[in-house]
Length: 218
Image (cartoon, rainbow, N blue to C red):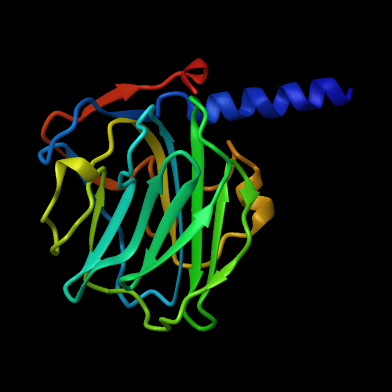
């Protein structure tokens, strides 16, 4: 019975993922990126972002870049292979030591609370030691959210040496802190309430390709 239950969960995850797309960033450039358009009406006092990625890059790169008119790195997820990730909150950089990269799909989730400054990072459902930012300023509401490039100016200022090359999927945003139990449920966590990968507005730029995904593609 336990085996059947596990199989049901896995199959449910496959059905939930089927038909959703994977974005392929095929080359190093400043022209390949994706603009996300979250539904944000007021400054965010809490924020959780999850993104699934697959890459063999051995250099630093930007997965998720949120800029505001006054801060180019208001919320940045910036892996530094082989075993570090930089998270920037309101231009404050905090580095996490993480397990060395392996060539497989990776789920990265970051949560931040402006009231306490508490910053949390999960990679493949493993939470790393928590940090506290000095910044307590809410983020937004005016924002530019870009996948695959690091914004050095609001909506631009890209450098090819910082771009993402690989595959990306399941980018979701919440205006609250997602709990560890939910994040650990790798395939079945609910869609973001301010940006959902399944029906959120995206604008693909340059040579980024949208591919249909099947269960065995993860």
